[in-house]
Length: 472
Ligand code: GLU
Image 1 (cartoon, rainbow, N blue to C red):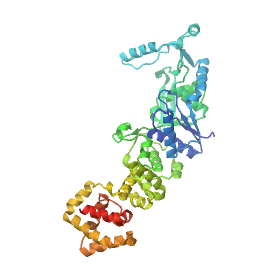
Image 2 (image 1 turned 120 degrees about the vertical axis):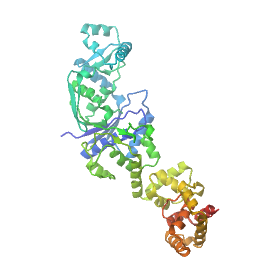
Image 3 (image 1 turned 90 degrees about the vertical axis):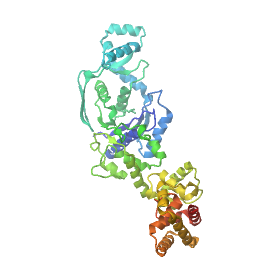
């Protein structure tokens, strides 16, 4: 049995889109699952739109996700010689022909077709030129492109996702494979490279389905067996329309910037259109690989659910030790303009991570705990102040007195809890009415880690100062 070889073939004409990352991930998973090889090929043939910066962003995004290639990256632009040789081979075998039509002639034919409300198909006229005619044009130095002869036959394949898909050759025109400047057209370059790289499975987006019959025609013309095709469904936004910037961030790098963990992103992307069966959501790498199959890829489009990504990220954040998150939290704090100096952030991270959805969330909460000028009263905090009325400051005064009596050495979660409980009992107050004003005083909001832990991470002096400020 030949071993599996798959590839991810991005065009470096933009950032790494979540759809592209998902395609890369499915290829990677399939290679891992089958013990195959994952090839990375940068399709940089669109010279105007391809840039090195985009290539770098794609490489960085894949590395961040841990979607590592086994071979490459190859750059398609280096293989023009082979692409041209393949086109010339087809020409010699009369599976392709020279087309001398000028751009103006083709534009005219296109306009004509559109006026008649039909889509333009090249009528194959140059494919019927006599040998002498062709020779005369060549002798005159007339520029030409090369077109493949599309056979009048059925072109069908058993798609690993969609089952059988079929086209009729007569519905497709003799498309150009080599431009008059000798550069290849996408479909030729892809087929030529996939053959050369011995690709066994082409796993790519649904948007390529219309290219596949053209590519199969080229495999046939070149006398090669096509690979298995698996067309992965589109990703839609929550409104059912194709995912785009209107829905929010679509670049993998944006999620990295927002503090999504790479493993959470990868887990989320894996479940975008693939199901391991059952209702498993959090999948460690080994399980993801063990369970992955092309049959498990769904036919219908997947919906990008940001709330689910954030929930999943929260799960991953909770499971990571604070020490592991600290460097990233420091970077986010830097971006927020907070300098924690040499302070050990681990207790702060531990205090807030279970209530956080992103690293940025953690950083924001840590920032408030480090620097009281960052407290902003949120609507829930305001509501509590209104609801308690005079009791808000009165209760804070009681807390302040009780906690001032606790010396620095006893400023521990256990001692703080005992002190607050004792205070509530002594004063005949509900524990919540004692705790909630402290939360609002220390953070501006009503949701946080347990109040004794909050007081402990903020520290004695700063906590008392925050309580005093909230009372005034
Ligand atoms: N370069 C193509 C793209 O970025 C992908 C080609 C393929 O996967 O066959 O859409």
